[in-house]
Structures are given as structure tokens and as C-alpha cells.
Image (spheres, one colour):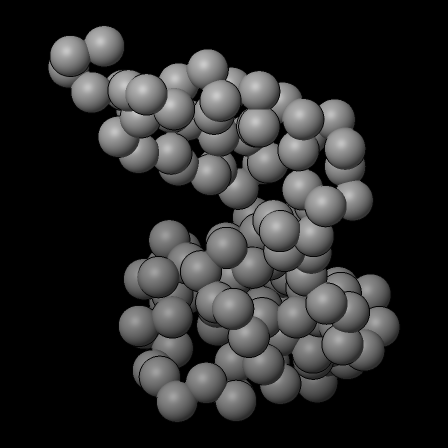
Length: 122
């Protein structure tokens, strides 16, 4: 019997905590059921793409714990990024002020950027 890498064990622990089938989780992560099976058996090490996909799709997936074994680090929120980064807040405020008269929607994107959709009248 193979000894599982610690990352695989922590991933298995997270997977067991989900109340969903492995097929369902594999589908959400965009991998085959065989990929999960190989990770859980120790045949393959946990891959970066699987970890990234889990972090994107599941709010309860603790990236730092699964990969590094560190407990309960909080994910930064976009509100905290804006308040900690004056340049970001300034850029958002300047652009929004210019577009305020014709503004329909603003979308915040995960990487800290934003998109402004203007009305057809603008």
C-alpha cells in the first residue's frame, strides 16, 4: 500500500466533508472521476489545476490548508483589497465619477479589475 502525500490526504479530508458524490465534484472541477480516484489512491499527486478549480468553485475549500497544511487563513475580500490599496480605490472612484451620468452597471472581476457597462445613450 502506498503512503499518500499529505496534500492528497488533506484533499481527501475535504472531499469527505462534502455531502456530494465524487462524480458530481469531479464534474464541477472539470476532471474525470478517474483523476479523483488516482489522487485519492496516491497514484497521482494532487495537481495545481485541481486545487485551483476547487478554490474557484467551493467557498469552503481552504487552499492554504490543503496545499501547505496551514490552518484557516482567510481569503482576502475585494472590499479589503480596495481599502488597503489607495491606488485601486482611486482608480475605481475616478472612473466611476467620469461615467456616473451614464452608468448602468459595474462588474468587479476576481483579479481586482472592474468593467463599466454604459447605457446605449452614452
